[in-house]
Image (tube, rainbow, N blue to C red; front, side):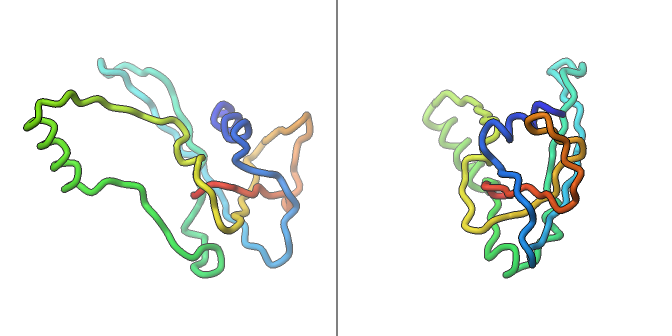
Length: 135
């Protein structure tokens, strides 16, 4: 659980600030998943820290949305080309790829429970996280 938060912190994903007046704070939740290996045995337990994006207000918190998902038709055409041209197909997974984008606006989120930074424990409900990547 702490490794994901540590990665976000190490990448400079956020800055901890006091909440400006008239700002909207987005909550978060933890999503847990069991990662299995090819034999179906437990490889590791994962947790994701996700924003409650449904709390965002259009034109107040954001101007546009984007989903980085390939359409099924594109995937099928690519696979057909791979077979027709006898190309080798490989898979690549980029960890924390979503952290490399830039936002035009600031997004304010609650701090995770028990989040430590430089030995201090923040319990002030007015402390928030400013994200610098697309949620």
